Image (cartoon, rainbow, N blue to C red):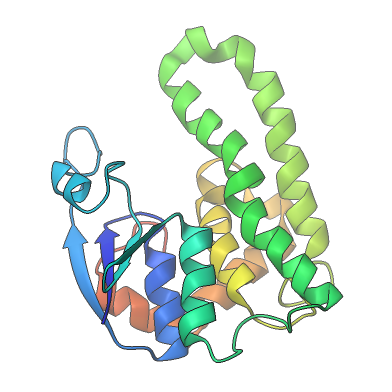
Length: 210
């Protein structure tokens, strides 16, 4: 059976959501962040040397990285669901979004959060970070113009992968200037499988208010 090693308030929430969308049985092993450092516990290093979450184990196989986990689950358990047909233009777009979320979009967000802790020492970096943040949020905002979902206007694993990006956006930038992202986040959080994943995974700081 699949086992998801799930850290509270982390990217692993979207893996639970994917499995709930597919109605695939899985075992859940939960880990709690340190209350002072907010870091993952050392126990996760026993699953994978990096000690990060999500981690997926499936028999003797261990998979890290959200995009790789989503890809693996859909290939082995998806039965063609939640991704376009391989060889189509939509599939190429799907792959781009699957990798874009962590490969590009998250970088300025992480820099913004980390440098905010530096106070005046981080001030010289803020204009460049702000420009990059605007560039990426503007790209996502424009991609959602007139559509509900990112690829072919069909819900897919790409939407699950990008969900963490749009859920932490309000921590860094006003959603009043990003109406498409705001509406997209609401659509995501209203899906029954998303709500089921919240119940399974426990409190999630970036989820819906109610």
